[in-house]
Amino acid sequence: GPAGLSAALRAKELGLHYLLLDQDQPGGTILQYPRRKLVLVQPVKLPLYGFLKKGEYSKEGLLEIWKSLIQDQKIKLLSGHKLLGITGQLGNFNIETSSGPVTAARVVLALGRRGTPRKLGIPGEELSKVMYKLLDAETYKNKKLLVVGGGDSAIEAAQGLAHQEGNEVTVSYRKENFFRLKARNETNIEKAISDKLLNVIFNSSPVKIEEDIVTLKTPDSTLELENDFVFIFAGGELPFPLLNSIGIEFGKKIEAMN
Image (cartoon, rainbow, N blue to C red):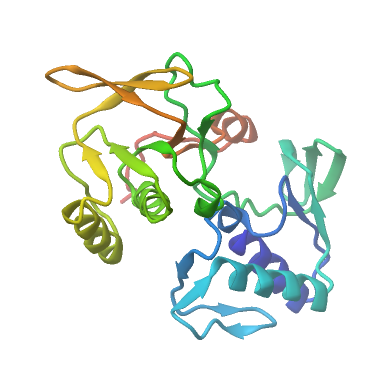
């Protein structure tokens, strides 16, 4: 992802021996964005590149920058190598990967916040019609679609799907209103609701998914919706067991020392 690539660029800039490992392809979370999605970028300076000068980039534009940097700077990148564990100590670490061991004096973990998509744990979630990301809204037309979630990713996916020909889009969100959305997404979803471009059912959660139907539970009733595809945006789960095995602790209260 952007953080890992920046660390590799900085290591090369300093003349250090380094290796960049990734279980996926270059791009990190950006790879999961819908096609042509606009990405808001804070002013940031990339080592050996300079400032990202624009406030917005398309998904494809940012990925092209990463690809060019990797090629032009000849970044030592190994894709498809999943981290399995780290042992040792400062100056002598042993890194276990899905493709074999690696040794290093220091390790930078740039895993991001996305993690593995969080599942709902409901009957029917294993069906092929259930997805946890939307890469191209234009591939869905004349469909009955359910989007689960109330964050920016869910809202952007719902709007992208609602703008395709013949789609009937419903958003199911477990809370009574949307919270902490980006200003642009908040404005867009309010307009989409007002224009009846899509339907939102607050205080609802899916309880069962079938081939042609999705069942939602609300405080007052149970609803059955005709459905072709379900998109779940319930956040991600970080690999806590792996991180704990490395020695990274979570949830402990740290008292300040006088």
